[in-house]
Image 1 (cartoon, helix red, strand yellow):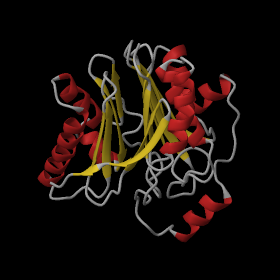
Image 2 (image 1 turned 90 degrees about the horizontal axis):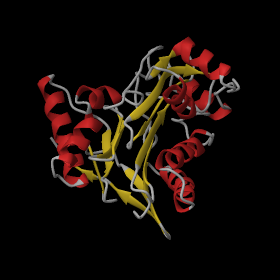
Image 3 (image 1 turned 90 degrees about the vertical axis):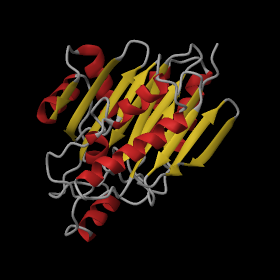
Length: 290
């Protein structure tokens, strides 16, 4: 029997980890627990970068991205540019379970969600609309301290599961898709190697397929912490080849033994939650320069 553990991004990761940990302690599968944790954050209107209350794109429309992955079977599902549905991660799980595909996007994702019983709603809150109105002239950007919710879990059977959900960069161009629904970029989960997730500027994370890189480094013998730090260094190197710097990005990881790690670009101020039986901690990711 493995000791269950859950890790989740950002201060709102506390809610995700608390929610997921209760299910893990009850013997539920890792992916089910991770999904419940992510959904708790999606439903919280005070979180302005995930689900209901997420900040909209340039035109004032909230569109959501998410993916899920099962580490035992390597099954995964994703949705991208999904509008009017507040729980994209749950839709992504149904894509995994009910279709021969791995990702649905835009109108097709919306129609699939409605067909499977999801109710449409206005995802803008008064607060998110006010924030958008105040900052309309700004270019696409991550919001300070608030970004993707990534939830990684190890259950009592030793299986791993992960979920990644976001509304993406604030003020993004309509139709923009970041790393979060891309398996291997924003999330990767494999019982034999470990699991990893990302948060921050998705374009930079996607360029290195960061989460897959972290898992493969753990498979090769690096600790979760070493693997996350190396992924950040690689991201700096790739950005440097284009003469730019990465403004905000972080990786977190969990290995099959339940060890965790996290690293971030300087200035990201990345925090993450760690839930274990009888304890819940908030920790800081190690900042790694280029």
